[in-house]
Image (cartoon, rainbow, N blue to C red; front, side, top):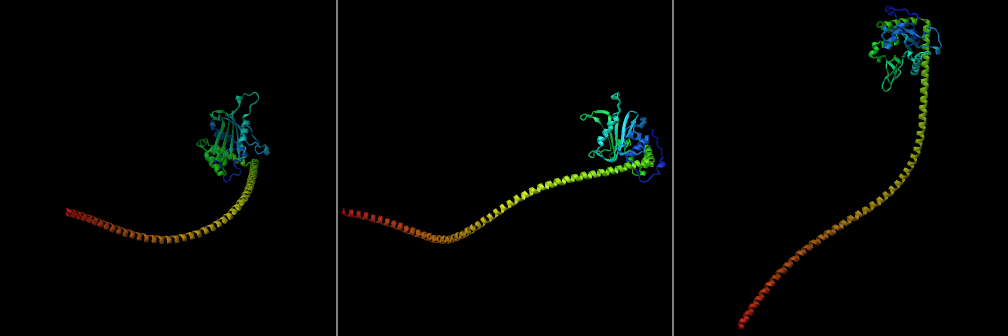
Length: 387
């Protein structure tokens, strides 16, 4: 059984100050802390599982390692398997770098934890298993969440299939999204603990929580153990190498994408250039045709201008003839007016003569009547005389 660490009083811890040499997100330090201090392991599990610490009688580490011993990277076992009251299997891990495999990795750990039955054991004897991950990155950037739980259920009705398989994810980069329930169980306090960079910050948290106080004391003890420090520093070196490798891979991938994009742009540019050259040749051909049409149009325009000039000349001649005709017409109209005036005068004279003739006829008729009357009178006188 792991020897429990010395308990430090707040007065002793208050003397600690300055930056923390080993980040508390160091997965080796995380494992060492939970393996070394059962009180801290129990407190963290009760917070994450929403359990009353008084109801949990026993928490045991099922896969302890020899702290400070050197391991090959391939043999590192930094996830800690804990059993609660001999009934609930939990597997905790701190993941600092996003290796883009957490979904499959966590499911693999969960299934291995659940698959513990021996030959002859009834399936109903299978203990519930929970995979817990403290991540220093956001698993689903489109749906950020501080504390998330996942279980098996019907996609249509949301009926739970089983409570025996669950996953818990604590995003250490999203503490600001902690809910009221998360704060009630102190999950946000543990997240702040792992993100502290200065001893004074840890001491402030320790003043509010006795379990965190115990954790601070254990971290201080572990950080003074040279062998454990070496293992933690080896993990930090691994992080840097892994981060450099990721950055190189990302740079290579970005370079490949840029090359592919540039090649695509080049091919597209060549295609567009060929199309542009074809369009240019067609445009030049159309331009030559247009120039030919323009030359023909200019020739036709010159011919039309010549014809127009001739028509204008003819029109000027016609206008001149018209003016002369109008002048002659005016003279003829003037002469006609004179003749009409003379005709009217003759008609007036003729009418006057006609009137005179009528008057003369009337006088002649009167004379004839007077003569006839005188003849009748003479005839009467002659008859009278004869008688």
